[in-house]
Length: 140
Image (cartoon, rainbow, N blue to C red; front, side, top):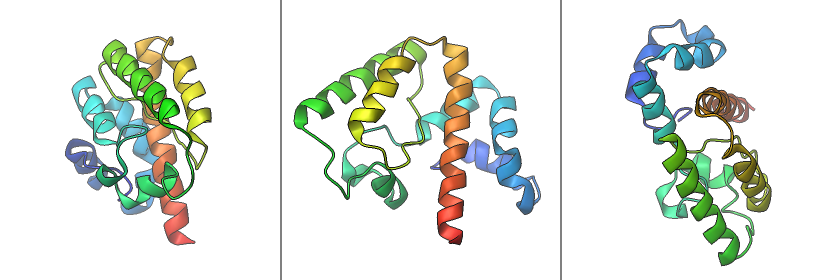
């Protein structure tokens, strides 16, 4: 699944010719009402979510098949996720691209201070980057 459980967004994508969907996905996401943008972002699994709760794609992307650090690192990631979500009202989304959790933690720490509107746009961009990577890997 390229986009995780986001029916409003997927419905909009279906209205676009199949060959243009990924090319137009970010444009479509950013043009949706904010509530639908948030639905799209919150449908994506939380960074560091329990392995049993994520899709097979996310399981590999977030590195659950590799050593990802300590319980302390996970606790810091959980705390920063909570802060980010409380500040912005939506989930932190980044293209992990098989990076270690420690590196993702640093990005989250930096992005937590950015303006909400900037983060909403950035998260949509990251979500589409994830989908493009999934498509590329499925096609390979």
